[in-house]
Length: 254
Image (cartoon, rainbow, N blue to C red; front, top):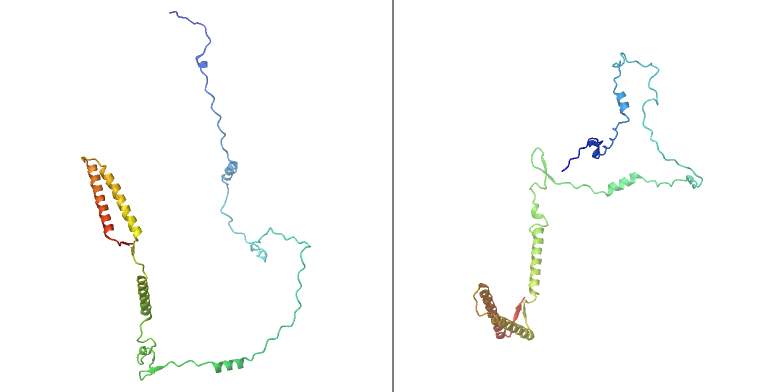
């Protein structure tokens, strides 16, 4: 292995590697345009006093005159009316004519006629029950029979009459529905009975065929359950067939 000794060289270790990119320039600081005005406004004004030592009084001739005070604000409108020559002429007012004469009415005669025709107010019956002249009305005092003279005395109240009518209508409606109700039992025809019997026998034959195809050895619980279920269905079908064959008239209850 040989060694090379370098005595003269111009390499610098800092210039071998690439320099990192320069950082981006910073954005300028925000400066308000009103900053100078605010600074001037904050400068305290020297030699300020609390006001006049004595309030200056106006001359007697400078009193408040008409139209010089603070009045109502004037409403300004931007609307402008442009007058043109195309407008129709203003209609003229009709000449004043004679007013219709009102018929003269003699109010005295009218009032006398009304007073003659009007009926007087009926006098309410009263009674005096003391020597000092105490007066009380006869109506409601109990001195004269009133309740027994009423037109509805001894009659059934109106609310009970309405209730009885409502109950009677409901009973009549229920009776009408029961009388006109259709029979719930229906007699099946001979054709339907024959078809029902044939269907039952067909189902029994299919069930019997499936039962005969079961395995002879029933050593598991599912086999036992299936066989028991099919036997129960076969017995039920046999009962239904015997019932239909023994009864020529069959009613269906809906």
